[in-house]
Amino acid sequence: MPAIEAMREFVVAAQSAAAGIAETDPMKPIANGIARDLGEANGDVFAAMGKINDLQNAFNFTMQANATLMEDPALAAIA
Image 1: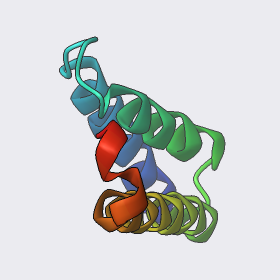
Image 2 (image 1 turned 180 degrees about the vertical axis):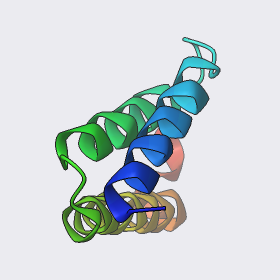
Image 3 (image 1 turned 180 degrees about the horizontal axis):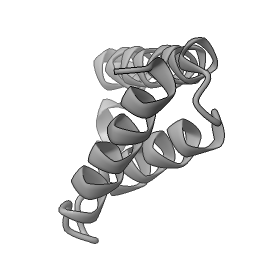
């Protein structure tokens, strides 16, 4: 299977997965973003994976920043 065809199938799978997530789920925007970014890569596997990597890095940074804030004793009073 050529890479561009595999990429199209991957985009369809990502869109289907995003559509299956409830609107109230906090992961819905992330799934939609991944599906959108994959679709915009126009069959370029490296561009698509680069975008996914950027999203993963941003997600990891956000999760670590939130964990650090949750452990801050100065913020315990408002938690």
